[in-house]
Every structure is written in C-alpha cells, then in structure tokens.
Amino acid sequence: MYRNSAHERDPHPDSPHESSPHLDSPHESIPYRNRAHEGNPYRNNPPGRGQHPNTPHGSTPRASGRPQRNPYRRLFTIPGTRAFTLGNLIARLPMGMFSVSAVIMIAGARGSYALAGAVTATGLAATAVVAPWTARLVDRHGQARIAVPATALAALGSLALVLCVRYGAPDWTLFAAYAATATTPNTGGMSRARWAHLLKGDPVRLHTANSFEQAADELCFMLGPVLAAFLCGALFPEAGTLVGVVLLLTGVLTFAAQRSTEPPARGRTATATRSPVRAPGMPPLLVGFLATGAVFGSMEVVTIAFADAQGHRAAAGMVLGLQAAGSCVAGLLYGALKPAGPAERRHPWSLAAMALLMWLPLLAASLTGSLVVLAGALLVAGMATAPAMVTGMTLVQHRTPEGRLNEGMTLAVTGLLGGIACGAAAGGWAVEHVSATAGYGVPAAAAAAALLISATATVGRTTPASAPTQAPDQAPDPDQARH
Image 1 (cartoon, rainbow, N blue to C red):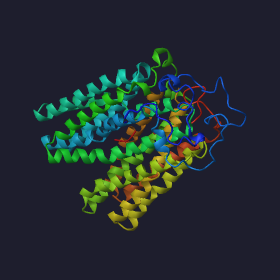
Image 2: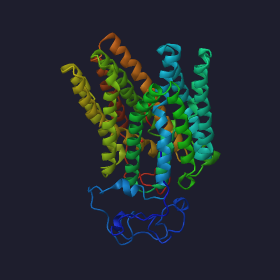
Image 3: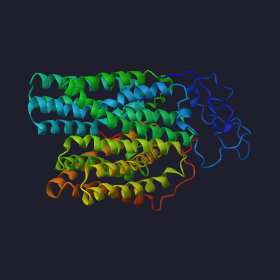
Image 4: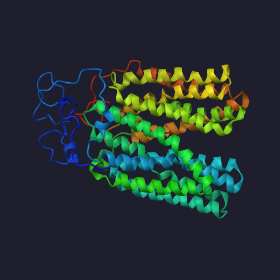
C-alpha cells in the first residue's frame, strides 16, 4: 500500500530510548533486509541487567504508558517503507472500486440489478476459494514472484468483463470473466507481512503499523466506491473498471519492486507445516472474523434501506462513509497509543466495545427516525471496529505457523468476506420481513456473537507474557478489508 529512503536515522537522536537497534547499531552499512535475518541483535552482546532489549546499551526504557509524540513518523524512518506503502495504497484503492463499477456497468447495459448482483456475488465466492491458495504461493515463492502474474491474470479478467458487457456477450461469460479476478492478491495482507518481517522484536511499533494498515483499509473503503461511481457517471460506464485496472497494476508493480523490504520466500519445505486453520487458537478466531464481517455486511444493506425509507437513498453512501471515517480515525489514534497488555487480553475488550456501540444505530433509528442522528450514531459506532480489527489481525500474526503468514491473514479476510455476504443476506431479510429500523438488530447481534466467540475461546487459555510471532526471538504483538 506504500517512497524509498536511504538509511535514515531516528529523527530524535537525542532520545536513545526511541532508537531502533537495527538502525543505530555500529553495523548500519549492512542493508536492512540482510540484518533482519541475523535474529536477535543482542545475541553476542546482551544488554545489561534490567535493560530493555529495544534500547541502546546503558539507556533506560521509556516511561510506561506515555505515548510517543509521533509514532507514525518514526515508523516510516525504516528504509523502503514509504515506497512499499505508497505502492500498496495505490493497489488497494481499486478493491473498493471493482464491485461498484461492475454493478453500474452491468445494470446499465443489461438492465438487471439481479444479474449484476449475481455476477459480483460469484466473484466474491471465487475469491473466497482462490485467495488462500494464492497467499500460500506467495509465502512459498515470494511476494513479487507471485503477486505480479496473479495481478496480471486478474486484470485480464476485468478487461474481459468490460468487453463482454460492451459487445453483448452471453450472460454466462460475465460470470466467467468476473470469477477470473479472484486471483487478485491480498495486498493488505502482503503489506502487513512486510511490517511483521521488518519489526521483529518490536511489538509496540508493530501495533502502530497494524493500526495504520487498518486505517488505510477504511480510507480505501470510503474513497473507492465514491471514485468508481464518479468515473462511471461522469465519463462512461466502463471507466471505473478500466481506471481500477490501471491503478491495480501500477500499485502492485510499485509494491513488488521494493525488494529490500520483502519477506524471504519460505520454500516448499517451510510451507509444508500444518495449515493455519489447524493452528491452536485459529479456528475460533476465524469464526470471529466471520461474525465481524456480518456486522459490516448487514450494516450496509440496512442503512441503504433505512435511507431509502426516509426518501434519501442517495445519502446512504455518505452516511456509511461516516462509519468508515470513524473507524479510520480510531485506528490511527489506537496505533498512536502503547498497547495495554497482550493482544489476547485486549481482543475481548475491543469486541465488547464494538458490541456495545453497535446498539447506537438501533437506538437512533428506533427512537428518532432521523437520518442525521443515525449518521452521528454510525460515526461513533464505527470507532469501535478498528481496535477490534487491529487486535484480531495481531492474533492472526501470533497464531499463524511460521512461513505461512500471508495465508493466515488471507484466511482472516476470507472469513470477513463470507461474513459480509451472510450479514448482507440477513440484513436484507430483516428489512423485507420486519422493517428497516429493526434491521439494525442484525449488526448488533452479530457483534454480540463475535464477543461471545472470543470470550468462550479465551476461557481457560493461558496468555504468555512473551510468545514468538514468526521467529524464536520475536516478541508478541499486531489487521483487509471488507469489500
């Protein structure tokens, strides 16, 4: 999602406790990627007794609980991070464009929203099947080697869809063409994998990185559909898809070109470990992502129906954008704070906050019936989703077997996508058979289910103070999005 800089130092050289051992060691001439493979930088020169492992020898650790003045600026002093972040952001933006563009393009040409919805649903189902396999190949052979051809194949599928719609091809060709876009790599997952590789042994900055990634997801979720609708309406129906293809190819090529920050390929032997689905603690976590996705999917459908019932259907996108904006801001603020305790302990609390705040839209709709009040309620409720997603993705990173991190995070995204589909169906049923106001009970119930799943899985589970994430010398701690 991300400008390249040479070996920059910490912008605060007078604050030794904020220095990174990778950047401020006597061996700065060694490239950052190669130093990342050296393991513990203190293996041959251990810190003194009582010294924090992430501070230079002789310094004292930062006062506990006090947040850094600008942790995001410090995050991007690592060489290469700005470049891969820029590329990944460009590649991630079209993820919020393609489905909206396809619906507008197909419905306009064939006069059927049912056909357009069925085509996009087929693409979603195909992605749920293909994405984990693509991620496994990324872990095994490397990001650049797999992401570029997979993106090229997905781009061809999008172009084929445009041609089939443009020239009146049979309906079945639309399903086949859109299903081919399922090879699109999980760009958000690959970016998170790079952060996990670069920030081994630094759980605080990894927490900040994951929070940034979640905020980026929300930003793309807000801007993508708006940009797609504008292009299709202002230019021609195929413009949204074509611009999305250009952005996707440009972003992935830029991202893949940043080889210095790419995690090493694990090869067939390393990825022959057990599937992330069977890793301890992963099954309930993935089911929790399914419930969380149902929150997102039902909220979208119910809000559109509620706005339509109020005679302001065109305002539904803006109202939903406020929910994403709340999540984006909350994600950035959450990343600026030092995590309080391990992710295993924070996750149920973040889900409890989400379950509580998801009652606000139901109360606003039932008590006032005002779209303006509902928009404010969604803004506040959205602030609870980012911390829940950040801690959830952190646990995925902790529990995924070594060498299969991309696959583990893609499985989490697949769970989200499945939940979005189920939530949309449940929300639509509630709106049609009860009322649009009552439909807001669906996301509230889904959030409560996610909390129950997490609480049940946490009971009796021992939370170690320090556990490896992807390497024996790595301390614990971190985030796709829903489209």
